Figure 1 (cartoon, rainbow, N blue to C red):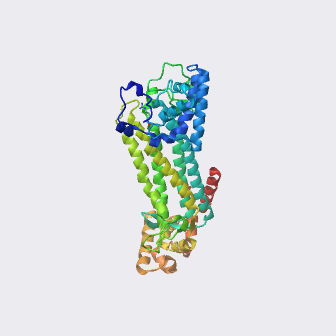
Figure 2: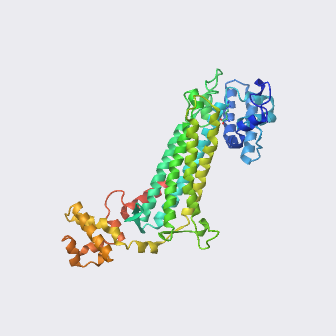
Figure 3: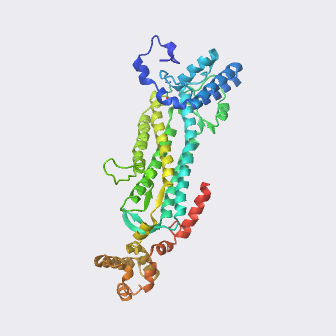
Length: 458
Ligand code: ARG
């Protein structure tokens, strides 16, 4: 194992098992870029404040910039024997520039350093996630726009309910995703507080300038309490909770699409390039991508639980348990980015089965509420109208008849308010067009919503 930042105090070497068990380099190496950027800002400040000689500070910045270049180009050789990424970079800096490197860690601890690294990582990842969600919204909006005239049977309890515009259904996804975006951006506001300068947990007696570091690293504020700065990971919990909610939304979308792609529903066809086959049943075309998206809720929620339970019962200030926040956080972020990336592409590879859908909205039981509302408009009470239509539906089902095939006299037998014009409302387009309430599936309202989203997302 490489030389420890704290090695001198120990009279002997640590056991190899200790090194292996406590090391985090295998996963925290992905914080390298942020660790170096944070160090550059810190050491510039040390020079400016004359805590270390300016020329040492400049030399350290030069060395760190060279390391940063290696990290970005992929040339950086991580030392599997390093205790963590912070030690690894410190050691490489010593190799690169010699003695001045030993001044970098002045007025700093790995405790505030690691909190800073994760916050910088998250600020960048949140920007990516938000962009991906917008891409997905745009992809869904496009499908809604080109199919704006398609009416599908809508479902409650997974039983056929009422006709709705397909585009109305698709826009419901965009609404939820927008709230996900808002939630994640809201978390970002709280992440945007710079912890460096808290040092181990109590601050420092050296004349540091935290405000300078804040500006260098483009944070909104500096943290106000040094103990809080190194203790808390609520900002990670928040992001994980929001990713969990987002994953639940995505699993619902996936589930809808899985159902819609079945032979039984046949609302959509997903291109072969986004499906998989069966090793035994040659006829199969399976929506495995969507199933894996649905399944990922478990993984992401697991990541949230993992950090939540890790935090529970921790005493204040830094504890090594906190090292274990990173694998679940990285896993959730990576998983979500993968999901969003493929779902954007999948939406571009969906064909709407318009003819099959048109066949399904011939089912006149879909219009039962429309007939109830027709009667209410003619002065019949809601209760009575419900009973009348209930009787019509029951009789038609029993006799295998269509409501539209009932004669004028037959209609009148159910209610003297049922005139021949009731037949005009027994079609899907009439049904959605009769909706008047704000937010309903009325085609004029939905067209406005499509317009609004088009403007908002561009
Ligand atoms: N690897 C540690 C983590 O991820 C870094 C901080 C270690 N600090 C310490 N005093 N041991 O949390």
